[in-house]
Image 1 (cartoon, rainbow, N blue to C red):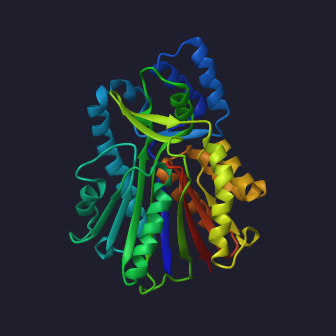
Image 2: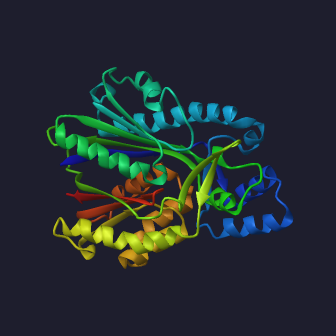
Image 3: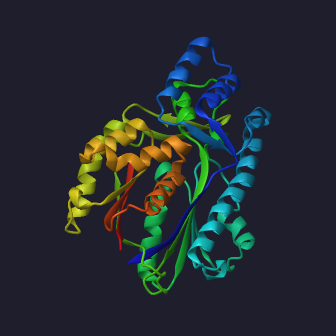
Length: 353
């Protein structure tokens, strides 16, 4: 088994009320009065109260073309992601030169050399660190990255690994010919980063115990690849989002989770905490209903959504950090539920001492 040594999140300095973001988006997209009324309804029903952006709101109009937007992504994703990783290493009491595996995930921009290569010398990591930059997983990337780290540490129990998830969703807001799906995601997604330090079973355990990763499971829902994703247009990435998403989650998730738990002699009522991706109110509802959970079991996901919006791959790290910091948390089995394009499901079984 591997053990989670630290979980941190980093949010940009520019924090906005949802109503202010609605006004800024309507202005940037030059929406008609009819579309503005729709936008206001979407923002009001999003479950989001505040979000953070990597640029001041006046800065988005200055970006001209995908080249300038991606340059801004590379610069600010490196800074924000590095802040999250540095904080996690300090919290874990792990020196940067002791990291053996560095997994990074992001889907809101492209960087070549990858973000991990840019950050290694800045953070002080060894040049022989194994690097795994992950792209294309979208919102499930944080959970998938954590799963692949655990799988790696089963083979290399003496090693220490770091996950970095960073997303600058505000740089993907379309300013030309915004569709209804574009407006939906503009109401939900925020900017942020998260980092997790994970140590193999052969490393020195942290004082006071902690949380162990017991097992992982990945499932791809059949015939769902057109439900959620990106397509590349002349102005950059555009969202692919259909109304089928919550239905796929509600239909497929319960069976996947129950099969996973059964493999370890557990049932849904045995789980003391659920770390759920805050994809949006309907997605959280679908998770709750699929697993027949009481509303309070998804409260942490709703709180994360309200505080910062959907941070895509970084959101699951934020929810995990909030859950682990809860002084009233009970020991016992915990389940991470990651969801993303595919539609893909990533599950982790954790155990808190």
